[in-house]
Amino acid sequence: MNKDELRRLKGLSGEINDELDEATQHAQAFENMTNKLIEEVTRVASTSKTADKLIDDIDAQFEKVTGLSKCDIALLFTAVALQCVRQHVLTPLQNDKSLRLGDQEAAGAHNYDRSLRAKKMYYSSTEEIMANSVPFDTTIGSEKFGVNLGGGKYHRYRTLGHDPLLGWIFGTANIMTRTITTSSSGIVQSFHVEYGQFHNVKRDYLNSHAQTSLMIERGLINPLTSLKRDEYKRMACALYQEGHHLNSDINSHQSLPMPSTVMNPEFAEKLSNYGVDMANVVAVGKQAGMAFAINILIAMIHRLIGGDFSETDTKLYEVRTRKVITLSNLIASSSNAVYVAITKDASKLDMGGMLVTIAETFRNASFIAKVKEEYLSEQWASTVLDNHN
Image 1 (tube, one colour):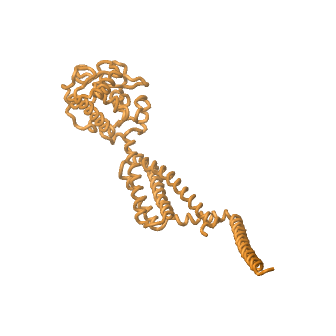
Image 2: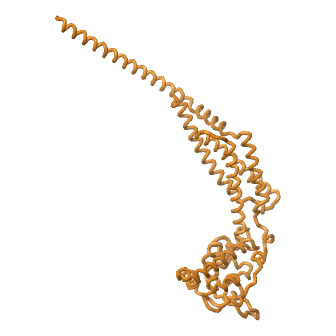
Image 3: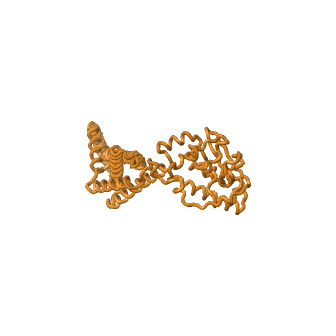
């Protein structure tokens, strides 16, 4: 064997040794990885055996980090105090109708000019509209047409112009056409209102039948499509009178019926006798609005005193905020129910606040459950799957 062959064999032997060393290193790395995987599987398997305990621990940790602090509790009772003051001072229900304004007092002082009542059918001038009461307040003469307007006391449940919703259509058209539209047992009828001698007294009275479809056409459709400035002015005046009349009637003795119930006058009257009318609907709306406003105020204050947090901590802090709001609403509503039961003063019943309490309880419970689910998921991943490594 010459020197060149010997040199080539030595070089080949070196390459083989290098490859063996590399293979040994790969084998060692694979063994290490396998051992680590075995250890991880063993750890996860061991941890999974105590999964129930881990979940309980994480759940307890969530309750601890979202528990109310002394500052939260102080704010909680501040919220309760504000809600209670609102309940006893502001927007009581008006169940005792004798305490409401009389019809004339609610409407305010008016100097009507009946001389501006015209004779033209299906048409009222701007001057007539502004100088006279709305025609659908007329009850005189209804008996001869077999229409029961309740002797004037309950005519609001039988005239579509007094409906808080339908009134904007039928009432406005009645004002534009000097008519009245009534409802009885689902039958809608319209009548012309005329000013003149009736039973030896000059007054507004129901004079003759009118066509409801023609009344709508002349009172709404034609003025809106005419593109004439005078017609738009008449329409604006009629809308103003309708709105003013509804607003003045809301807080009077009989108030206004619930929207659309005039199509069934007997039902509307029964609801009113139980105190379910627009006066109390407005009161409940104010109660709810004020209760919600206090909740927003408390949430804002709680967030301001909380400082800066990470995204996760912010959600956990919001859970505390929601707990403060929910608990304050529940305490205030419960105390109100007890107060009303003891005093039997139904006017102090905080219906609006109770509705807000129910809504906030469900809304906040849903939010807290969602945050809790995210928290449990993150902590489970951190503990069981060892994502922190």
